[in-house]
Every structure is written in C-alpha cells, then in structure tokens.
Length: 225
Length: 208
Image: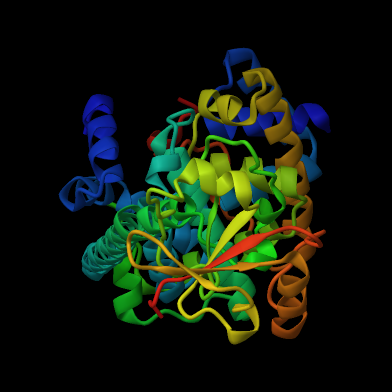
C-alpha cells in the first residue's frame, strides 16, 4: 500500500511521471480498496482547492488595529521619554544640590562627637590646626568654625597645649570650670579637663571620648546657635 | 509584488509605516483568509483569525528574520490564530449551513457550482477539516502546508529542514492516515468516482 499512497500523492501534486501514471492506473483498475482511497483523497484535495474572497472589512479592520498599535507605541514611547526626562531632572538635582552639599559636609568636618574619632588624636607638637568641632551640631548640619588665632594662641601654640578645641554655640555651665579666655576674634573659651568633659559627656550622653582622663580641652563659645 | 518590493514593505512596516503594511495585507489577505476559512469552517471565525494573524504579524515584524518566506511565516501565524479560536470556541466543528451571503464569499470558479453544490462543498470541507485535525501533529503539519497553504515541496523542505524526497514520503504517509480518518467518518463522499482519472483543472497547486 505504501506504493499506492506514494503514487496517489504524486498524482494529486502533479509530480507523477509516465511510469508512475501507468502504475497508478494498474492499481486502480485491479484493486477496489485502492480506488476507494484514491476517491477519498482526491475529494479531500478538491474540497480544499479553493480561494475565498475576503470581506472588504478585513483590510479596514486590520488597518484600524495597526493604527491602534501605532498609537499605543507612541504612547509608550512618550511615557518613556517623560520618564527619561524625569530621571535626567532628578540626576541634575543630585548633581547641583545634593552632591555639593555632601561635599560641603565632608569638607566641613562637622559631625556629631559620638561619630568623630578626631577627638582622640594627639595634636601635640603638630603644625596642623587643631580639629574644629561644633558641639551644637550633633546632626552634622552646624556651621563650620575656623580655629581662631591671636598673639597668644596661634594654631600652633594652641595645639601644643590642648588636645582639641570644642566649639559650642553656648558653652554649657558644667564646662565653665576655668576663667574665660578671650580670643582675638572675640570668641570666648574655657579650659576644661578631661574629667570635667567626661562628666559632661556622661550627662549629655552625646559625646564619646575613648580615654579623655587628664587631657585638656578648650571649650570655645561661638555665640551662634 | 516582487520579492524586493515585499522585502522593502516588510522593512518599512517594521518601522511602523502603516501604508507599507497595508500593501502586505492586500498582497496576502486572500490566501490568509482562505486558509483561515478552511481551518475554521466559519466566515466569522476566518475573519477574526485573519485579523488576528495580520495584527500579530505587524506586532512581530521586527522578529521576522527572513529565514523563511514571509507568506510561510504569515500562514503559521494564521494557523495559530485559527487554533486559538477553535480551542476558545470549542464549538462543533461542523460547518453551519451557509447563508447565500456566506456562500457568495467563496470564490466561484468558471464552472460555478449551484447553491446545492456550495453547501455540499462546505460539508465536505467540514469533514476534511475534522479528519485533518485528528491527525498526529507531524502529519497534520505537512498536510496543512501542502493542502491548505499550497506550499511547494521545496518550501516545505526548507521549512522543515529536510530533503524534498523526505517531504514526498512524509506527505504520502500523512495522506494515508488522512484517508483512514476519512473512511472512519463514513459519510465523506468519494467524489472523484465520476472524475476518477480526471485532472480537473487544479493547475494552481503544482508542487512548484
């Protein structure tokens, strides 16, 4: 039967040569079952052999769908552009405002005492200015102070005697244990011992000094809040 | 439309050029609709499937690499759209009796059949469709390519990645299975008894 199907298939597709045609004729004339199969497949083949004219609305409907698709693409594209513009604007804000602010913060050295290890540094003999700390700026947002100098207390001489300078808008009464020192810029400082400072620290619970005992500090009042 | 014109239309349509896609629709809509009608047996479903196939084509034109012919790709989309509709509807696959209007949608050849013949053809088509849909996937696929889409042996071979000789033998086996299914239907008319050895003008479907 395989031959039969090969021959019928070739016949339906128009690929049979003369020998094939003759072989098929012989099979069909001698075998009723072959005739039945041939009849079935030829009918099926012919049933499918037509082309239907599409309704006119097909083109119209498809093109309306295409237009909807294009509108959707434009909408998505515009939304993407708006998003991209938003990101660009946000990036610009970051570049103009936030980054410089961060840089200012970093440059200022202003930070809460509890987070600033600079207090433990030994500046004795250093030619560098003593670190400046703003005691009122526990959130790191306070003003930047510059170490004051005068004839008696230059940065160098000051650092020779004091481990660190602490700046306060108003020096707490607990730290005013010495006579006030008036600097050339008008600000007032108080010499405080490590023990006094430690006591104050414990009370304020906002300053951390690893080992302040016996160390001298200068508490400077700036008058700024 | 020449191959170059079609390639240009595909390229432009992929960029969103609606008039270029319109050219492609005009070029292929008759065969797409015919295939859908043969597969679904319903003018309404054929219309829906054709629309869906063209829209899927438009949406996915950028993924069309030209590795197969555009028509083959489009027919595959049409087949998928038809199968989706058939699965969705789960309706009786028998073709409803056509109205005159539906009957008129069939392209009437020179030897135009009378209305009774149109009805008979639709019934035959329905039985063939059921027999084809009952074939195994590989056999159904090759029958669809050849009988429904009119693809040449060469195109089928290219699409399936086999030799033309393999296409011939697979087609023969698929037709054998189809004949078995038709026999089982019991009602399929063994039409060509009257035109047994006839070549009745099927010129458009040589193996190409």
